[in-house]
Length: 365
Image 1: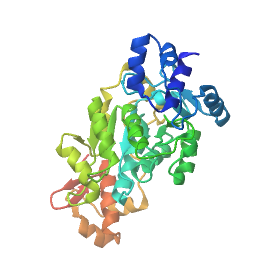
Image 2 (image 1 turned 90 degrees about the vertical axis):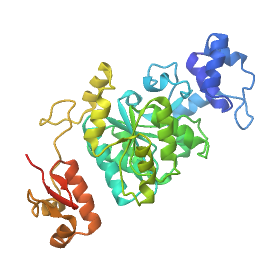
Image 3 (image 1 turned 180 degrees about the horizontal axis):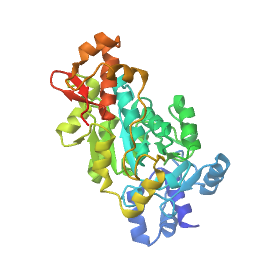
Image 4 (image 1 turned 90 degrees about the horizontal axis):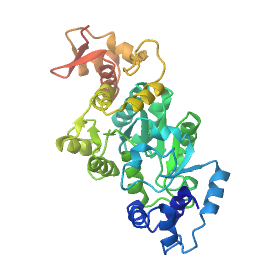
């Protein structure tokens, strides 16, 4: 038995975690001896652990199993006492070691939240960050799509086994993530269905892989806040996107900001807050992952993309003095919701600026 096989065997028991295995390794000197001494070599169903059969299943499914004994195991997780005993990876193992930002949020997102998740992920991916999230509906899905939109790398962490994919609505999204150089990852053995226990475990990986966790939209009681709490306990920077003070969907993010999370307005704020955390080798990976553009230097955010017809319509009505959003709705025929989204997008692109009185104006040179 090799060390990686011992880790896979321990992971199959589902009766002992990484902290417990770590104590056994300290007691017996290495993970193989620890496995030999371990008495409960059965799975959760009571069947004997068969790590050889698990490796056969992985090979047949085109899945790589990565353990703390393998060189491809992500360094960001390796330093954690609660690191997963095994990671089941479909896609690029190398992607697990890229500099990452976690983007998390509610499944029941508003249009504002979905738009912000997409644009934050898109701009961060264009700046060289990989995006990690939970492949859930809502904010998670939009974060993955935003990274993919600019050819960036993204990782989806599942709350169940790879062969018990959930939610099924995102199977095609998962395939696209893998096809475009990212990865879909689980710490759970084949056959493990998602449940109330597995999702918090999944959140540990999402937080642990990242340099910072960005909450985009969330109510107060949610898995998003659990992920942020985990990140905070790990010493990982927590950031949040503000929303309406009277909106339930923004209550969680506002609570995070009140309690010390960094308020961020656009991807540039996130990049600026995290860039100094990169070691030399990680910075090289970030630059290598950066979407090619002849118009910006490596490590800098790329120029804003071309404006949409709706954005052009709004810009045509603006001057340096400013126009109220209500007046812009009247002039352009757009809805108030559309106008709010376009205004936020143009602010992120640094094309406009907000003025007192709910007005926006052309940005000064």
